[in-house]
Length: 232
Ligand code: ATP
Ligand code: MG
Image 1 (spheres, rainbow, N blue to C red):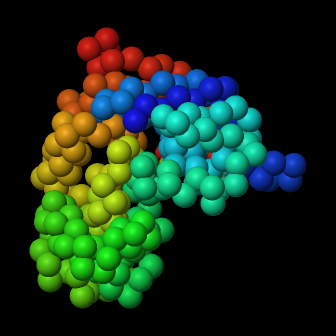
Image 2: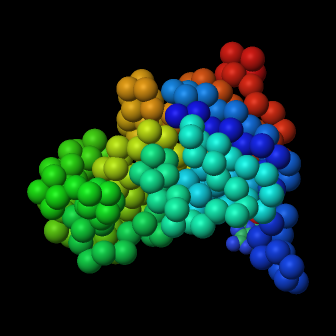
């Protein structure tokens, strides 16, 4: 699925004393099947931008096209529910995605929400746990009793369980040791090679560059640069 941003603005808490203009005139084209690194300083708007791709945030102005979906100011989030399956987003803070009493319930939540039976969802949960390097013994455990790196792996598993066409990962290697980070990046590359569009948000360009085709650099709410890795 390809992604196009046209003159997208995002203002948090508009018309309040706390309003903040986080995205400014963002134009962006992300090709179907590409793997893109989204980089930029703290506060440059990376997390804000990617939350527009699955309509968790709606633009204050402008539009976003995800294949046939059009996301604009006037949309109601509930009409965009199918996008949540097509564009899977793993949050920068995995705690946002872990809220059930067992890891099993957390992982099967997505597939069940989109029509899978309990049995199908459980089979998928076992498969994705393996993909993120964890065994089935985690299923009955509480997501709250895990290390930071384990929580991140579970959050990634929960999104992979929905088999999204677009996989968006916000700082997915934070909290992982160097070996774990490498394993995770290789997993995302493998998913990309199966034809999925992957967007990788990172502070550390050096860590992710060898896995990506394109680099988007954000600065103060704007897309400052969008080049292929070869052009760097
Ligand atoms: P980081 O690398 O630290 O994760 P980022 O590039 O992801 O940063 P964003 O989280 O998109 O940055 O934030 C962009 C700007 O918008 C920041 O200045 C931030 O303070 C502001 N911001 C983010 N979320 C909100 C919010 N809910 N309400 C108001 N302002 C916000
Ligand atoms: Mg962020």
